[in-house]
Image (cartoon, rainbow over all chains, first blue to last red; front, top):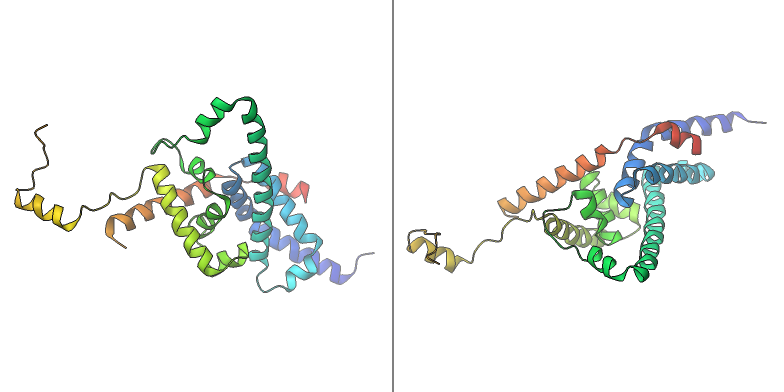
Length: 191
Length: 34
């Protein structure tokens, strides 16, 4: 027999579901790269939350907890997929080698590039920059320190830029720029 | 942070936000599983 307290809990959970299911599914999508699996994973995370809703609703940041559950489920799924790919690679080693090292800048889209990042860097970049979470909230969701978020995000962004071929061109050293200026700024070589 | 790098980072952020928003979650599918 349901009680008024049960009804309240159910109503609160329902409101939480409506507010956050889309964000959680999108987070799962960027972390796994799989649209259908992302929705199932978000559902599994929400179900896990409902099973411990009394604790979750009492937490300071229920949504941070929810994001953490999504991240953990996504990590497990990605690891399983990687293991599966390695098994396949035993049979198709040459082909696998090519696909493991397609380090060609500018030909991959952002989702494909994300999939090539190690999971923790990927999660940091996604939470910080796709979902605009603060470093503190990202750390809370991932269960790591703010320092780790800073370093992993910075490295992850640099790697993504390299994969996408969008990294800003490094400036020439000052002496080189000065020499170019002295020679009239000519860039057309005589080779 | 230098200008070109800031621009590159901003462009990357925009692409990431766009990639996140591109996924249209199936509410009914999620609800059915919960």
